[in-house]
Image (cartoon, rainbow, N blue to C red; front, side, top):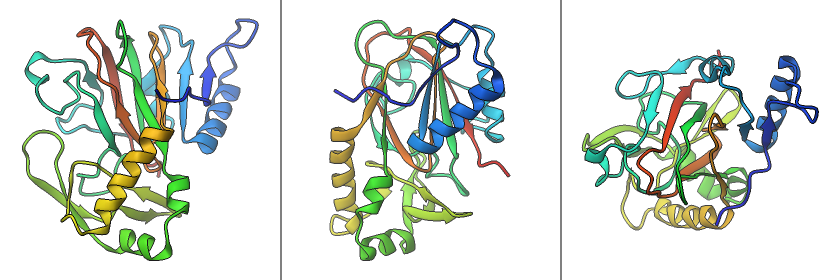
Length: 244
């Protein structure tokens, strides 16, 4: 069972009054800087998740060109490892298969929460894990480029990237348990095993209520999902690029 999230921001104050927009966004940014994610709760029906996301940076299209992706079970996808299934996902970052930079932020918001157990978004921070790497291992992860297979169906190898990159003073983590092309003697094989174990031990789990929104730093956090049974679970997702 995952830990409860600490970085939670409610839209109203203790008196039931909406938090002023300037203060709300200032608190959001402070929580994001500290924890790498924010779970937004108590959002009214007229809250605009897309407009909120655009204030963090420009939206990036998904693989089908859509700027807003519908994340809900599709019967044809239930036998495959895909967002449209009800299966659990292994920890990963998003966009490791892209030619350029992966999304800086990911955001999910809830249209219809699942009934029963499961369907949680799980997150873990890689910063302390990176701090524990030896200098030799870190240099290997920064200098060695790997082939990454595309996670969106049988599309083969995508592009070559190192696991660790730098962009304007920020570390960019690319990671997947399943989609790095390597042999069993490569140091990354051991890293995948260690990070899977650390994720299992340290992750937090976010359950959804209607209109809840979760935003996280995709260059810093790994995310996954627990399996669920309710076919009516429905989220929406946006990918947000680094602000220019």
